[in-house]
Length: 177
Length: 400
Image 1: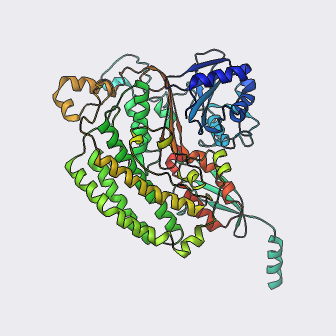
Image 2: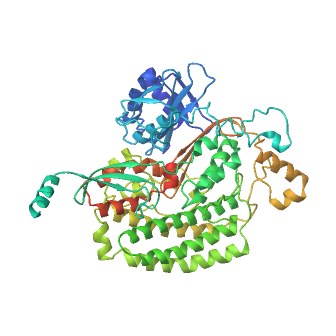
Image 3: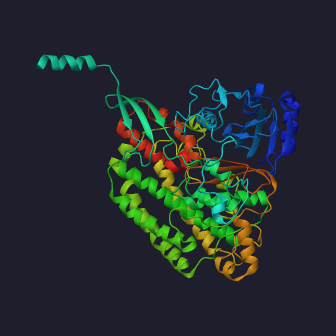
């Protein structure tokens, strides 16, 4: 039986209004809960352990970079899943780029370990309390966090892909590389 | 002389040896490294290092129009690329709210289940190889070859298939495909059972695999296991049943589960899943609906090549799609499919632009491989090899 979104939303708002900063329905019909970074662990623990919710499975987590959103440049999205009622829920937090610290969820789910290392590797998010926060897919001595939007896909000094070679002129600030 | 030699040995007692398993080691079946601390033959601790074939797929996806992301997904789990491709098509279809005709859905199911069979065949026959039984592997690779020929008939490629299109399939099943599929369905089950007889009740194989690399259901779920590895531990979670996509709800099949989550259970669960996949293919093929194999969505569906060369509209749409000039709604979707290794998820954030704003791949391999050190702690080195091959760690999916 599927826990429908209205019941889910009412349940969260009634039992833990302190965690609800914003709640909305995404395009694919998944409820998305925004909460404060400071209480993200309490919020995740509540969602996992509450009798009526039981979001026991952390499907994945990922970071999103919005360079234009001042004060909310980085976001972490937790994809939660309740297998018993077949319900998914997304939890989001946003925080400024000059303070990229997020409490680690490894104490709640061991699987968060590599997921968080991956987001540290690509976005430079510091997960406080993580047992082994180091790069995972990139080489250890890389000095950038490549998934941040300011890093182009290819080296910006390359000239061999200049549009002039394709019979075009002008400075096309192409988002395609 | 003799005395000094023995005193040297005494001084080594109690010291742990460090062993580099990989990055290129024939038994790892892929490029990843494990630094093992060994006490004789026993593993005291393991430290996996991954990323050797990292190709920045998430970054690449942010710079490509939607239909050009499909070839990236090929290279995730390259043992079952059609599942990845179709998973991506389903994601975009969910975002753009495209309804795919029944025929295309059934065709996709047939291709995805063939891919699952190929994936499981590789994994299980490799477990045989790692226990010292090469024969089954050589015979099953012949069968995998026939599955690849089937891919070839649909999409022209074998390994990195780029199969299907956003909005349907690229072409209908050809007569050769029908012949080859019928032949495969007629002859494969018997040959597969022969392979099964080689290993499943083989005393040596059972002694080598039962109780090797076990994981409990609780630990498996805490580690984010999905797919056959989780089902071997006794949890019947399968995306095809939980959130049916592409008409999986139309078919009758069972979800096999194991009990102990050890290497033998993983092997048996995969074997049974192959039989269930055959059942699904049989049902889908016998009930294959008539009708078009794609939706009439010229904004998204890449037109057939012969029309591109002869018709103005097709050429224009081809150009627009390839350049990414297609209407894409703003929003977020998550689409999961049951890949060869578990829940393969696509979390897509669109800002309405011509390429994804952010695309996150939930790669089952990457997520469950972190349990490997815990699973092999205290076991023999030869058992650690078996545990790894039975977990079916695919380097492409691990490193993205």
